[in-house]
Image (cartoon, rainbow, N blue to C red; front, side):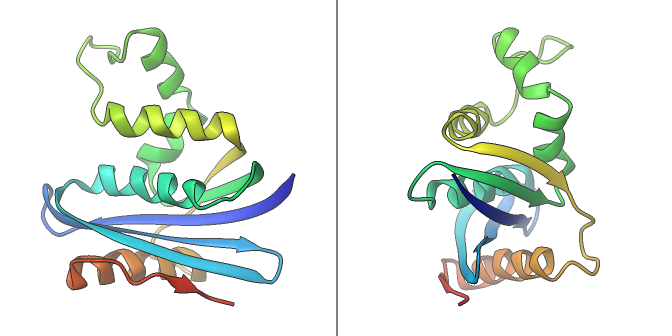
Length: 152
């Protein structure tokens, strides 16, 4: 399988409010930037959607290193939350409905199509790709749309 490195980020102006997501996909010497907008959303939804849109852009099953500054996204898989929620009928440990079930279900499906490892990175620090994703997400909010394109 091809090895792809993906960086993702989400942003929201107000929570809820208008939001954006951004991602950078890296494969060898090639790169692709994607982003998008939602008029009424939350930061957590944008974090999840960034990962979904990035993996949906892959044209075949890949080995994916997904890097995000979102503890919500990463811990969902790294700490096994999503698997417990699934076993518990999408209920939390306190028996409340899990938020963003539609997005978690889609992420689960994508992790079955690709060999995905999640990596928590420090946000707003010195990681150029994480910073680029943040800029893409914020740009989508400001433009109220997407500005996608290849980086190389």
